[in-house]
Length: 217
Length: 217
DNA sequence: CCGCATCCTCATGGATACTG
DNA sequence: CAGTATCCATGAGGATGCGG
Image (cartoon, rainbow over all chains, first blue to last red; front, side, top):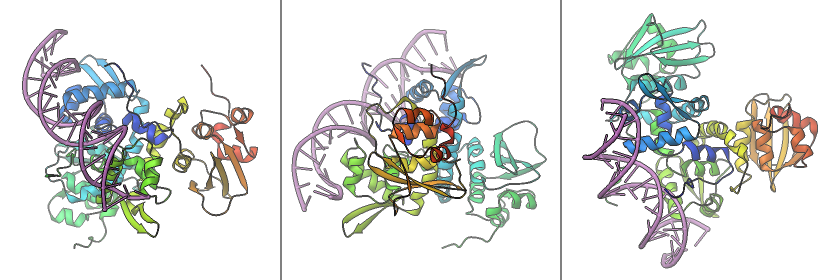
């Protein structure tokens, strides 16, 4: 490795410089994995199905060099975590995920899926949903319990925070994103037997899915 | 071209599917170019210094196939424009550009720069700035006049809208982003002779740059 | 096992030339 | 002007190896 003249866009522009740093393949997905909390190398590797092991190592090195990821030597081994600046990628990533939500309407197909990904997607999709007093509920998706908290300022979700909330909804991932993105009604999901939970809570959490069934071609 | 199995992440996740569609190199920069308005092929090519012509053609075809860009056959030739959905990339792109703003503090170096890029960057960086009654001013950057309008809901900028506003500021790009991102004070910019304009207007537009000079190492 | 490094193959990106 | 065609350099994907 004689040189390291990174392949930069060479543009004096915030977007271009951001892409210089996180625009390479897999980078933002690595950050997505680390948003709920630190992970080990192999956890990243198995969660990001398809990434080559040398690429993951190289990307982690690059992200670390750019101050987005930090390597922690815990008692259990090496942990990869986001720096505070890296964690601020949440906002652009939520916005991008919201923009891409319509692309989820074609269904899951044989794509991979990790319930933890919903910890990023749910608050992003439910950005305009508020509740006063605050509403806390669990979503059980493929075995993982995601705790969603909605208050007057919006919503946020964490993976396994503390106690199990009183109300718990159970649903398949396609159903949750369909409801949150407004492409599916609660009635449709419930009558198909793919959504279980208190009807009133459902209507508060998914107001976009509470209306009429969208026209089918 | 026997096959077209696009290299997809294969993940049921809004972010991953968005990246499948706009994550390839140059894609978001092409969208940035088109945000202020439609452009021709060669205008894109010269503005995006460094892009290979075959890549630009392939990217435009891909973006068109995915419903982000549309090709208009105007009287002057082919025009590339964003679809409504493509234009909605403004929000994630502004967020990414805001996140990347600290990377601009190292200065311009010999990077390329187009004044139109500030039409995206300025409203993003000045997101929290409001004014009532509305404030409209022109920013003359390297010959291009950008009209910035700030009202009680925030700010937006357009390239050459209609008339010249009454108040016009003149500045170099580094100065504008430095002020907007808070890494530079108005006094510094003015006394260096690199910023000209009405002092009171300056303080309203760049409140982040009105304070103390940040510590220098 | 975990955390990578090496090696190989093929797809993608970049530069240049050329064409309707 | 708006691309296509071509060729080479680089990056991604997959298998395997290897020290701790």
